[in-house]
Amino acid sequence: MISSAASEVVTCKVLSTRDRLGRSTLQGNQQSLLQGKFSHVKTIWGDRSFKENARVHCRRSCRMQSSQVHKKPFEDQAVTATSTAGEVITCKAAVAWGPGEPLKIEEVQVAPPQAKEVRIKVHYTALCRTDLVFWEAKGQAPLFPRIFGHEAAGVVESVGEGVTDLKPGDKVLPVFTGECKECRHCKSEESNMCDLLRINTERGVMINDGTSRFSINGKPIHHFLGTSTFSQYTVLHEGCVAKINPDAPLDKVCILSCGVSTGMGATLNVGKPKKGSTVAVFGLGSVGLAAAEGARIAGASRIIGIDLSNDRYEPAKPFGVTEFLNPKDYDKPIQEVIADITDGGVDCSIECTGNIKAMIQAFEACHDGWGVAVLVGVPHAEAVFATNPVNFLNERTLRGTFFGNYKPLSDLPGLVDLYLNKTLELDKFITDEVSFADINKAFDYMIKGEGLRTVIKVIDD
Image (cartoon, rainbow, N blue to C red):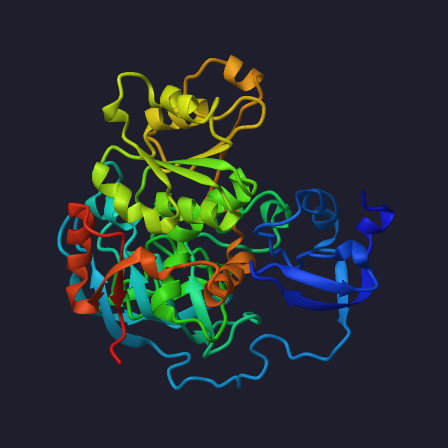
């Protein structure tokens, strides 16, 4: 265990590099810090005894003096004020005027960022099912007119007063949840549910002053999830904007803002399967395939996909899925089938459907003694999880997750680097690309169940 020095500032000389999984690997006169990660960045995969002891105690308490003089990331990029800074920008946005109505490309006015806010130019955005659900507004209080979109990538256009970590020209990912870095959750090693900036589906204004930055001829247009990326320009709180590697292709990494990170993190950060493990993934949509991708990266030997559609098996194979089960093909509960073919149950199961029956099956499919089930899908409000308490007494573990337990600002840059070093394969998630004018085609594809992720090119070259 770490000594009393864990509560103090530790000064040491180290040389920091990254291994093939994007982890920080440190060498120097503090060998106890080997493979530590600092400034809130989580180890995606590694030695858990170190992670649970040394990393937790010292990753925020170490002031590092590099053994070589290095530039800080992005330090060599000149800070230049844009000609539009401080001005209202008129641009195109896809506006939803009512529940289920096709989005309409409109000219909107986007106000400049206020204190602690950032205005970004959105280059690419993708459609997530959450956008679809709130656009249909079948089970939610409708809030229209509104600009949807929360999975995207762009470039900082200008920043408001007090913003110091971002500047014009930075490549960024807007995120539907945030990291203020000051609240209990942000300071916790275990949580990413920021008190200030956690997801809020009902709020249609900025938290700074309770007003919208979007308008059409003076009429306010509601925000969505604090992101509203179905617009060529949008304004976000600085804690919801993650600065990324300037070499990152925005048309690929845009999908890291939500679904892929959620599924992959559920496996790597919460389920934590060891190399050679057997993993079950319930639901083979985009999030489920991201969970399978996480199991593949972790080195699982068997990845069992469970879905009600047999058509989803072949497309799942590139994501590491080795076996497929359709519950409709069996006369007994699927958890019993899984137990039969895995000698008692899987080491880790990830539930990505939001169906309460599938949640129970995923938990009961885990091996006693060490099995871990992770719930990712969001059930109906009235759903009740019911299982025999003996399943817990037999040392099965049930966990939930939000955004894959990733801290947005701290961890997303590392995921981008995983893609750049070819550990994480993003391209296979993207099955279609459409122009901004054809954004409604993305909704049609999702409604019909065609493809995985449709990327929308917001800015023309």
